[in-house]
Length: 332
Image (cartoon, rainbow, N blue to C red):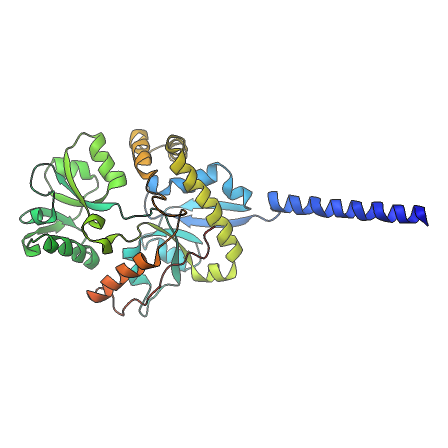
């Protein structure tokens, strides 16, 4: 009986060890690989670095994910994500608004903020009087003719005591902001400072610049953001959380080690200008997380504040409901 008991104990111990071994393997080496398609908003740049870092360092593969990064179609990332052909993509809170309401509303929402604050504003040649919005009177501003864009510009010009009707609006056909300013085809352009603004510095173009978020807090909205399809989030919440956990590691690494992150991006996309990527990466390293408690977090007050401004100015029809279009529930 003693021998039988000892054999039984040994067998139980062996089974326990085997079970623990299986659990350990399951955690560290997922047996099933999930395929994820991530669609960019534009050609690869430093807004996307965390994505490439997470892929290069194996954070996605460790989470059991195989991530394919693709260029956006003509209709934009939103359409591809909404259709389920891509699980994640990049959007912007301002341009996302029309996709969230009305008969053609898309089943998508933002799940992470790539940058914590809006780093966009107006750049112009230095010393020509456009260091504040009122100075745009009588100057050529290159516009995309977006209602939200023009309403934003009007708000800051009039808030500075200027007459928006005196701003000369010309079609925005600019592909290189530095060249456009140097050859005087435009006087002022809306840019994201982390790329185009940094480029003006590298090319020794002296400029004046004002940021929208500095002039009116309502314009400190989230741009860019990671978006996902509602159906995918509902059906595969664990996959979504695993992806965002790995992605957050990529962006945290990019913030902590901008030189290494720039090198990873340039090796993945060799056609990029290495000097510009490094300078841009150093600038954005403090912007990915900034003053937030964690990468990706979106403050409901700021999100709703901007959409309330759109509603109040008749820029959304129908009106955008509170808390529409975003969630922090899938962040680590």
